[in-house]
Length: 399
Image 1 (cartoon, rainbow, N blue to C red):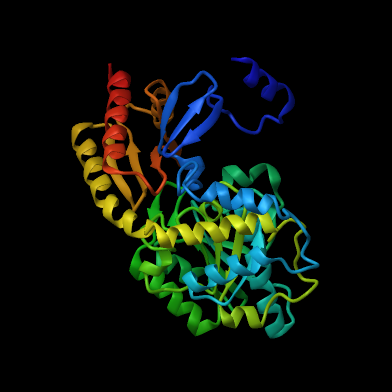
Image 2: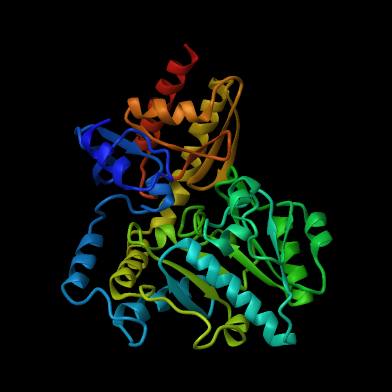
């Protein structure tokens, strides 16, 4: 353990079991540690750095905003907020946005909007939300309450009440939980932390139909799977099942802490009003300048088109790895959000640790899935390099 690690362990609350690496700088799809060692980054800060590190034009936009003003408060208008909001609304086809500082905050806001919508209909405060087993929506109390993992919840009960859980991709399970009190159904369009499980198209469409019939709000969590990662700006756009409320974060700012919950017209007109929700930092000029520039770059650089060009090659190479190694038992995912199921005596945690020795950053999801969420700008040579480094890693573990 070097001096930087010792300093962190001494003064930072130990809530993460960190890898023994001190990352110091990045360029493109590579990171360097304080010893100068370079790593191919196929984690992207957990699906944050969609544009990689120091994408041309991104840094300059942020530096320019720093020279103007970084924060004003939501008591006043600021230029970047309106610009970022317009771009987000146009690409999502929704109606109104509330900017937050993180994905968990976006989930909290989405929950409040759904409950306020229901309260305005009948004046009752006993409404229920249906969430999915094996889901992950964050670690704040509201977000944790709709996270379908008892391990994360156990020490923090009692949590927010009125939450029921159904099985993802099982419409009968969802129907069994619906009552007259159900005000919302929340799910990730592609489950991330739970092990990279995309929603089944028929399942999502039927949930949408049920919500329409019963005036239940559909909340889709696009925090990890959104912003181009699956081959469309938001994953739900491939399903033909639009949400009433959507949450987004991570790659929304490509490194700057920012999130948002976005409402369709129906929900925006009948939910939160002044005094219902607020934030000191959310929507600040600095974060919104980042969001605005990200959308500009996605459009001018044709980022989503690139994802759709490179993803089939990536999937092909991952499938070849699965044929080569018995310890890789399955592949799941969409676009550049992929998971390899690891088994047959090999632990995914051992792969993520050993990979660092080979100059590769890759992370896990669930208990047995190797998760790949690289920058969306990767090229074929980076896929080839990834396959080589992962193969070297697995070969060492199999000796």
